[in-house]
Amino acid sequence: MPKMNEPAAFKQFLKENLSKKRYVHSLNVADMSRELAELYGADADKAYFAGLVHDIAKELPRGQQSSLAARCRINVSQIELNSPPLLHAIAGAQLLIERFGIDDGEILAAVRYHTVGAAGMSKLSQIVYLADLTSADREYKDVKKMRKYAHTSLEKGMFEALKFALADNAAKGSTIPVCTVEAYNEFAMKMKAAQ
Ligand SMILES: [Fe+2]
Ligand SMILES: [Fe+2]
Image (cartoon, rainbow, N blue to C red; front, side, top):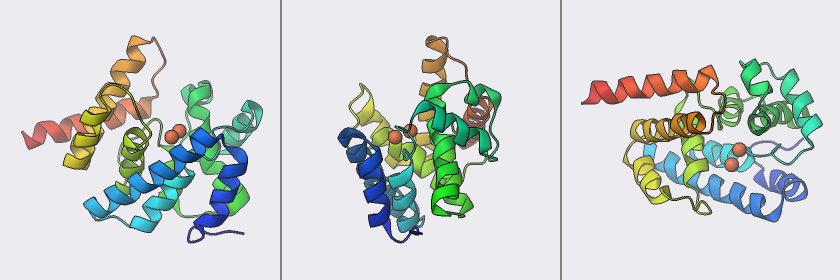
């Protein structure tokens, strides 16, 4: 069974299970995760690995994502299980457990929370969350600003990212998992305290 320190084995799995575009995205998120880990004093190899595998379940058939997510015991809410775009993060963590025997809770949490965030995220989880939004392949309107925030501090990066995510979800009329609101509140309080 391949382990975290053998990213080549995972790259092979990703190549076989993701489109070219998403495979390149995964490599870019891994690179950005390493960059941010070096900037903020986190474990760079762990960050690279978590970034690499964060979307590992993204292109699995919907049914497979649902059944993996239903077995996941990492604080999963019904709102998330009912939201197809959110399933892949939960399913990804469960796939890493079931298929690859990954048992590093920090890596599993970073994958599981990369779409929604949560209160009390570890440095590694924050890094992967921000790397996913700021990787080299990202092209949305404010990506340069977001890269700047992510390189200013983890708190500033997370605050701006969550602020955007909440506003965007609400504008679209989407449901918002409670853990996202809790994450937002935590970073909003941090930003206030720092003023
Ligand atoms: Fe994702
Ligand atoms: Fe991603």
